[in-house]
Image 1 (cartoon, rainbow, N blue to C red):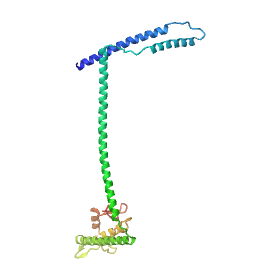
Image 2: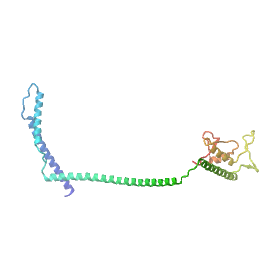
Image 3: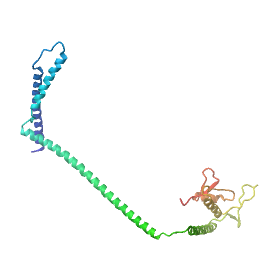
Length: 264
């Protein structure tokens, strides 16, 4: 049977079922009318409301007893109608079950993926714990009790090495700067810079001395690492340091500079 024939049979079955329901409903209305108008009694003039309520109660009681005695019956006995309606209900139920099954499969797939991911994470954490436990055991076996005096001596030795390394770096920096960045000379004599013709001449300091002053200030006074620029600082050297990001100006006082924090 084709799909269009199935739809047609289903529509015919629904129409026939509606007709049978309308016929049964008409019978119910007729019975209701008979129960309402049977045994019409004269309403006493003393209390008409009470009499009407009593009459209504008797009618409803009789109707209730009749319905209690009846057994449910199938609305229609036409096998074609029952088959068509049954097929329609089964198709709807099958469609709903397929939707539920698809949803359950998708949820199970998602749960399986989450489970695999959690298991992998658990294995990684367990491996990390095992590694840490092994490291702790090795460290516990290699622990050496250092006295305060020995620790102080080691710290002092490290500080001396750092100071020696610092001096070595400063010397290397001084040699490089003096070689490649000498003070300006005029006929073999270093130029001297004056603020005005009426003031005394000021001896310029080398770029090495400028850098050493910035480094020492940064180390000794990290809370205020700025150096004030005076007439002994040759301006081209200052511009060189600022242009290449070696030094920075104070945000509020342009006459003060500091060494850039290259270790940040």
